[in-house]
Length: 396
Ligand SMILES: Cc1ncc(COP(=O)(O)O)c(C=O)c1O
Image 1 (cartoon, rainbow, N blue to C red):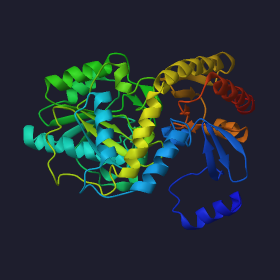
Image 2: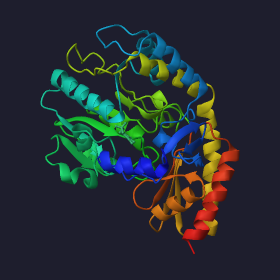
Image 3: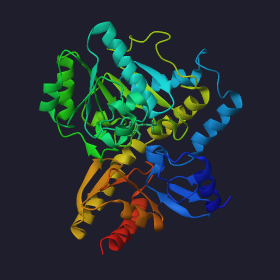
Image 4: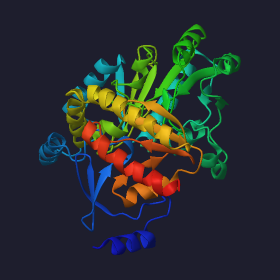
């Protein structure tokens, strides 16, 4: 099929919930994506922080092939070796105690909300409120959407799930004021991705941990976007030396095979019993075999590479500031970087795409970069040359 045919078919039969790029993606290799017309793109979207291992990493492909020949699915009525091994690896890497597997980031957050409520029912009767941060993003299912404090996503889908309260991100005083006997949990992204690439301010998460411990309130970190080396540590919370009670993961976990995980720390791991939560596909043999290998690939130096190349990339992005007054600020950690502009970001994204570089926005005025963690300084230089051109065109 040609690109035109694919786009026409999509428009006819797929519900229009996405603003799609005019590209039909058919192949990926490392940090490059190829379209149906054979065009090559340097991919700094990476499937929205999913292809951290690079597209179609040979080890991940081989693991999927091998598992597909042995057993694709059996249900959680059975013990699944790759699921057990993955749970062990995730718990050891994060300091959590037990894992629940599902199929996406939103589902991981749904599981976190349910686990928090069950813990509350058993241990803190009457406390059902979860405090979330302004500009957060936790997913599109009703619970996750209710935790997502952005009215543009919520306004057409009222009534929301009750029990969520919003405070400004990074404002310890506001959070301290909001915590009361009704508070069950605080749910945060250590670095807000979709909300504009905002890392937690220095000292904030540490203080939130102290506060939640003092008040017997759970701390939930959503690391769906920031997990698996993306920020230059295995988990973004490790930049701050803070361990939550619940950690949610997805995206790079399966390198593109749909899988999410909710990890429970010692305080909450005993709260779920059989029947409390479930997912037919969650943690199935195919997804967990892929994720086990995806984890192994990340562990082979990609976390350190994300830190090193991310630092280099950030420096290059900062240099744009000297030339283009449109650039207000460069933010982020590792290879989750954002450039705040004084003007809408969409024309810059389009100009970069026309020149072979795929990048994202985060809100109206922020350019967001989420390349595979396999990129080197060489690819950063290539991307910067394209960005320079895009700025020349858009800032004329
Ligand atoms: C921090 C965060 N949480 C949750 C989600 C939702 O994940 P999914 O789209 O897999 O449901 C996202 C997606 O972008 C995210 O960035």
